[in-house]
Amino acid sequence: MLEQLVQQLLATVLVQSKRTALRPGELDFSRGVGWAYRIGLLRRDELADLRLLGRIRNEYAHNWDPNLDFDSAQIRDWVLKLSTPDSPVLPARGVGASLAPLGDPVAFARISCRNRWLMATIQMMIRLLIAIENARPFEEAGTPAATATSGR
Image (tube, rainbow, N blue to C red; front, side, top):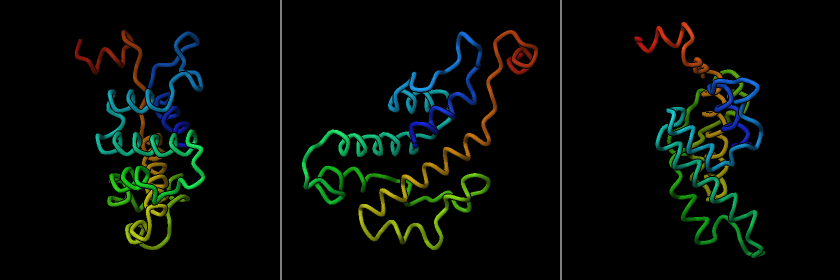
């Protein structure tokens, strides 16, 4: 879900034409997150948390250890580095509001590593949805709107 939202955010702002349209799956999660940060769509803390969430996802997807859980040393270390649960974006509005948990999300996140991961994921989904709602497409170079904003 996070990967799809990052792709949607990029597709919302990038100049789109038949030749240059961002196709689904063209950028993997890591590259998409990197580009979203490079062009100013993500803050540094959001970049760091999305990378951590990607590592956690990959660990579960590629590790066959039946004892792997949120209290496993590596997963726990990554989860505790997540900053998103400590800085909720609530109150959310628009599409993100339907994902917003009831009660105190910071207190909920402190109960367990699993809850902290869950809150980080939900909060990041809300942040990405808000970013998509607020995103404005880049103008193609040489168009009157792009020329006016660049001062050329």
